[in-house]
Amino acid sequence: FFVALCSKFPMIFGNPVFGSSSPESSNIESASDLVRQGETLLLQGHMNEAIAVLKRGIELDMFSAAGLAYLGIALLRRREDRKMEMSRSSQDLKDGAMYLERALRVIPVYNSGEVRRYMSIALEHLNLSHQAVDMIQQGLEVIPNDHQLLYSLGRHLDTLGRLEEAHDAYLKSHHISPSAQALTRAAALKQFTPDDPDLTEMENLLESVEGKDKMYLQFGLAKAYDDCKDYDRSFQVLSAANAAMRDHCLRSIGHQDPLQGARNRLQAFKENFPNSWKEDPIPTGSKDPIFIVGLPRSGSTLLEKILSSHSQVSAGGEDTAFTPTVASMMAKLGHASNEVDKGAMLRRFGEQYVSEMRQMLEVTTSHFTDKMLDNFWQIGWIWLMVPNARIINAVRNPVDTCLSGYKQPLEGSMGVLTSDLTICGEHYLVYREMMQYWHSIVPEGFILDMHYESLVQNQEAETRKLLDFVGLEWEADTLSFHSTKSTISTASVAQVRKPMYKSAVGRWRKYEKHIQPLLNVLGDEAFLNLDTDHDTHAANIPKEEL
Image (cartoon, rainbow, N blue to C red; front, side, top):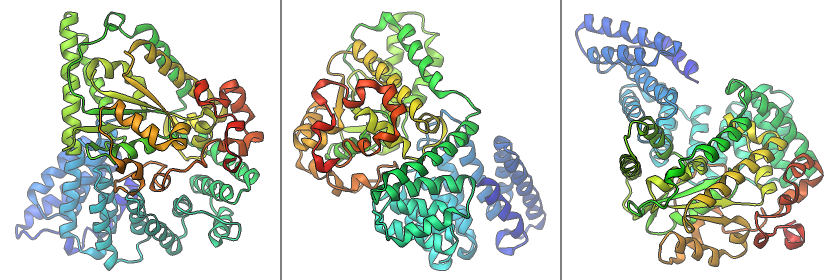
């Protein structure tokens, strides 16, 4: 995307609208040279050097649209390259969005599609989809057939829960320029029937696409066939999609083995987590954070939606501060001279985390959620750093969890873990063992296992239990969570816009003959929701839900 975006600007450098309003021609020439140098450095991946050169160019010509746009892009790219830096609190992200906004002020609307698309990505990371929709629609008033801008509009409408509008934007984008990605996004937002013309169009397009486009379209087709109850055909295309996804993800992470990495991490925590700190920490510090942990597709988005429907809870989503805070803490912890110093340092970093989250989210409520699911690895540190926090572990039947992950086009390490059913099951067992270990260390009442199956069967009772656990008074609005307005950027965006439903319980039964490798790995646990009080054997699921 960066190369495609950057390649647009050299073609329009000579356009007067990208010049300066300043009369000093020597400065304009120098600024132009610096911007060209910055563009080259950006394309070569030298972000720090590109930023320095582009800032010098902007100092000479503050109205250089190309310079402003490149500088915004370089700042956002550097933020992405800094793996441990939290997104929404990143100064590079904020500054990048500011420079892109300045670029949009001097670029005529008819020529602004590329910059608007990149600005929409910045606003998505800043959790400002409402502003992104307005900005994109302003552009579409002048360039209505910009298919990529329409696709960006669909993404933000999708996040805001305006699903019909999002579906229409995706389809309009596709009809202007056929796109497997747009069709796949649209497919996730509707219910298919066998005679649906969109299904026919997806099947026809599949014959003419290759590579990543074909892979994503296969995920969309698998969902469509599932809607039509053609489960054999659904699994056939799903298997092909996941084979391609696994190859793609392995290449993207340098052919590392994330399952072995997870096993090593589990063993390291069990052997080395500081035994001398296993006594209960002093119960001081903030009660603000509510951590939601678990695996993807386990009901975590539903839990956050319920909690954030309460007047005293703000939704933090998955773009949060704890992991980078732990990394900063670990770099300094070894320098502490004694246990007292270590304890004080832990609390100090815990306070820093809470402060950063409150500032990032602009929190005015008494509590906020942190739904970075991978924080299940960090529970020991959470207990030591913010011992008054509460942790909700999202638990769902392991087969439903794994199969649901298998149906989603997840990328990176998680894509490797979910695109093979055997590996997916093995990873689930690592997660379960990690959680069992934390339960054995932290005090009772610090972690609550919330079972998806129990929640959908007994919504009010389970919701009351959830609110009581985090110390909140009952509010009836939490039962109508689907009606509250909030941004959602996970794969569950369509599901949590609906009232509570039970049809996702035991869905794996529809694919039972295809998923024997997963069942073999999980053994008897395939029929359980991790304890005998939450049995989800087919005999306990209403027939209409199977």
